[in-house]
Length: 149
Image 1 (spheres, helix red, strand yellow):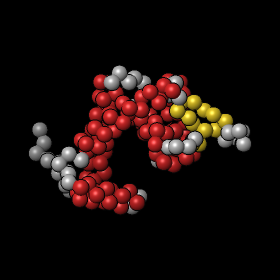
Image 2 (cartoon, rainbow, N blue to C red):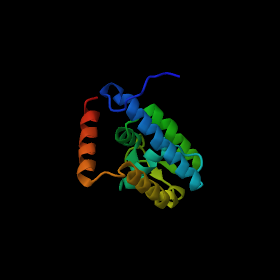
Image 3 (cartoon, rainbow, N blue to C red):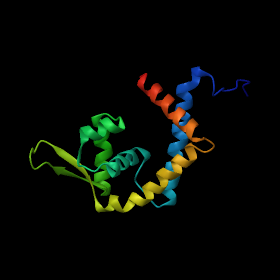
Image 4 (cartoon, one colour):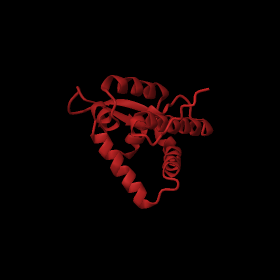
């Protein structure tokens, strides 16, 4: 057994710490999906569905990729799975047949209340013991960190 102690507050471990937080959040999402009998969907699919839920317009793949920070090839694999599961469909533009939109299906819309509950639980868990000022400060600092890359 090593005497080494992993110190989360040491700046040299910031990326490792963020990865650990992401892993815990993803595990929580997967557990919530299981509790709600949502099968076949991973947290990466949830990011796409949540973005589509919030959007009021039809979206192209490039729009979704930009917003959820995924490259087009990765997004294509994720969307193909959502199409196969019946949560989204592809729709050709009437004006330009080269443009394809990704649209939620009725099956996906029926999941929206569950996704909303899970999203609220995730936020509540993330900000437990944070006051409003601390929440804003954290989001400001995370935004600054994100922009550094």
